[in-house]
Image 1 (cartoon, rainbow, N blue to C red):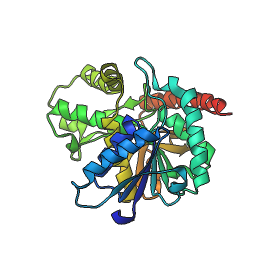
Image 2 (cartoon, rainbow, N blue to C red; image 1 turned 60 degrees about the vertical axis):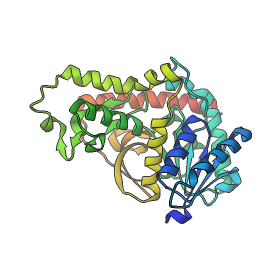
Image 3 (spheres, rainbow, N blue to C red; image 1 turned 180 degrees about the vertical axis):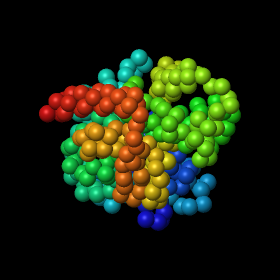
Length: 317
């Protein structure tokens, strides 16, 4: 679909949602952005504020206050609604509250006649994505969790910093839950096509240095939350990147929370894996032959997610 016809809707105009809209406008992804939020006064203020940025872009676009009835002809919906993560709280401790919020949103989206792609970005995101898909009954490939996309960005940045490179030179994948059980391996890291291990063979990087770097990535959200209360710029930009790949039918491989139906030996959950993103959402889950120790960690991450999916489904009965 051409830029002039693309409409993107946001549900939830908090820090993450508005950071996404700002990044999407900056990257000129769509012609129209519609925002839905319970706090209408603040929403109207955000729309007015975004209007002030539009004259700085060559491609014309508009930002509007939307209602659920306006979603029928939207290309992509991004959902960031839910209560924020508190200092010291894990993402999984937010399950019950946000499951009820997500189920209510899902019913309203389904009633609108929407038939596009949905990107979920409300924590715990892989669990909330399952709730949304369960309630709407939408095709699973058209429902996507932002999953480990943010961890992948963080991983690439840390590797680039370690090697003194631009982060865009690094390709990487992160598997598992968007959360404490996310898992990292340099097996699928490359520098402009050069495998990480080959690129670093003369650099004497110890195993402990690698483990410390991976732990910094895993704990980075907590470091941000402890200092400023929440994370939003990074995930806003990351979500805009995912949406752009979808609306432009990029057919590129990236780490997202995709639905598994036997891939990696797992069924009936959304979890971070490499997938091809395009106009239909997840065009293909890319199944890799994980090493035994990595597969063991992946299976444990899946177990944790399934346990919390069961809690979320109980909460919305």
